[in-house]
Amino acid sequence: MKKIFFYMLAGSLLTAACNSSDAGKQAGQETSATAAADSTKGTPVMTFDEMAHNFGNITEGERVEYSFKFTNTGNGDLLITDATSSCGCTVPEWPKEPIKPGKTSYMKVVFNSAGKEGYTEKEIIIRANTKPETVQGPKIQCTIMKQKT
Image 1 (tube, helix red, strand yellow):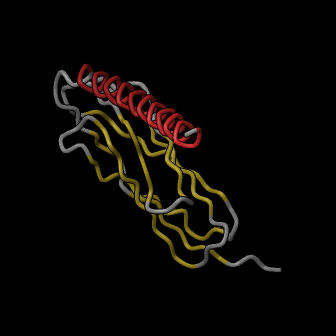
Image 2 (image 1 turned 45 degrees about the horizontal axis):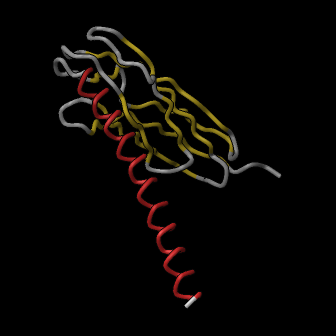
């Protein structure tokens, strides 16, 4: 009888813990969705000055970075919610505040060439309150030379 009571108590606690973390996630998603909706009083458009940057030859293990300039050419505030790369070696950093129509900002991209060799090209995918929600961002290119030992 004690075992049954123990299992019922453990199951109840586990269920309660799972439900409370889901509620927190939903609340966070609703807040994010509300912020995005508030900033879309028009349609923002993200326009980059250049869609690719070539670092040329770099040495294996070298970290390089480049800031891509972009302008909100739409008629609503631009809010970037996420930016990812095709590889974990490339990390984009974007402005967290809304970009007003006609204003410019920068997306910094840091590339770590450790463990890589030869020609490489990494693309950035951006999620924002644009239409469509996913924007093909800029890409970086380089040729990674082996370190001389």
